Length: 248
Image (tube, rainbow, N blue to C red; front, side, top):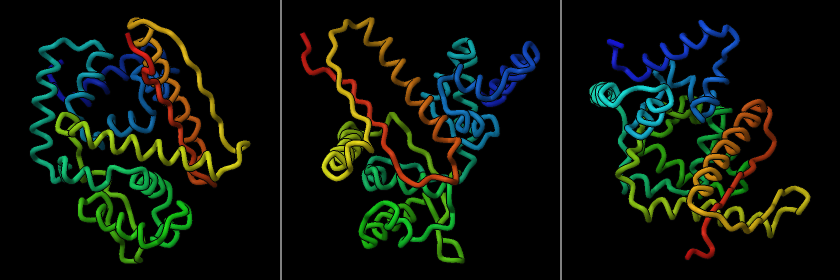
């Protein structure tokens, strides 16, 4: 493996699998990597900026040795240094660490012709609040306004380095999703919600297995939702909280 680009090595891995099994698909590769097919497609087309965590995850899945992994990381750093992107540090990320930001980005993935009025209507938010969120996103180069007055997502212009995010910012983001879910309990009819709570006793070994299964479940839901792209009529939240209530 002379080329130490993680993307190229993943392409090589995919091609080798397809040689052995002509029916081996992108969806099969995504399932093997425990990722969304659309996300894996972006990586294969070199349309996503990999961070160290993702490189290590993919490398472990396709069986790369530690020396090759380090060379992939070094290669990735050189590529990033040559690109024009916005590195979202703690202060920048704190401005957008809320559910509304991610909902807007998701809408713009599907429909680039949205303006603040339409976004506000779809998210049931005051337009003034949407304008404020949009302003922060524009300043951080997450989106840009087109000549027609609507917005488009700049998918190649930003990077969040996981290791630099403070715990309190991640807590803020998580709480914003939980509070939104709590609001729906008060305002949305019960037949339009799926809610289940289970209390279980486990040990550390079971915890790791269950955590992996929850991750797989979330990816599966995302794959189902992807089939509806362009025809959505609502925004749903999958909020799985697997947290200790008693710990000895």
